[in-house]
Amino acid sequence: TSVTSTNNAYGIWFATSENGYNTVSEAEFSGNTQYDLVSASNATNTFDNSSFNRTSSTVSGAGPLFIYFDARTRVTDGDGTALASVVVTGSDGLSTQTSLGSTNASGYTSFVSLPAYKITSASSATTNGGYNPYTISTVASGYSASSTSVTLSQRNQTVMFALVSSSSQTGGSTSGGS
Image (cartoon, rainbow, N blue to C red):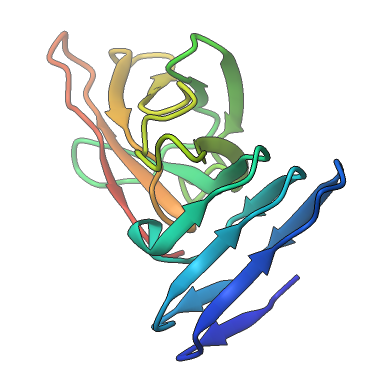
């Protein structure tokens, strides 16, 4: 948890012939001269809300790298006023439904860790594994339901919604940071 590796030859390297599970959380790997993430392992390795350069990652072993990112939603009305008690759900590319909770008085849901993609020896695409893109949907009494497609690709993503009381639908947008 909370590992930082910058400007080294390698950020982190997994090398084992044993099966097993490793999890790296809230870490940052950047500016490494060879690779940020390397797996020559048969183990399943998970990166939970960690920052790294996806194109500076390689897998040569049988074990995949599962990538999770934290996401939340902020919901306002058309005038920018925060809406509380809005129910928010997410559906991944495999049609798995996930509750993102209800918004608080500031219009935010809590951050939820969601599977984004997996890196294998065959692919590091953000769609690999079938999770991305997500469809994030909102339901609030007195407002039109709204949804947007989101690709989880960074730590602490925020999906923004501006709901309207008419039948017009306003799409969402995403931003990084908190």
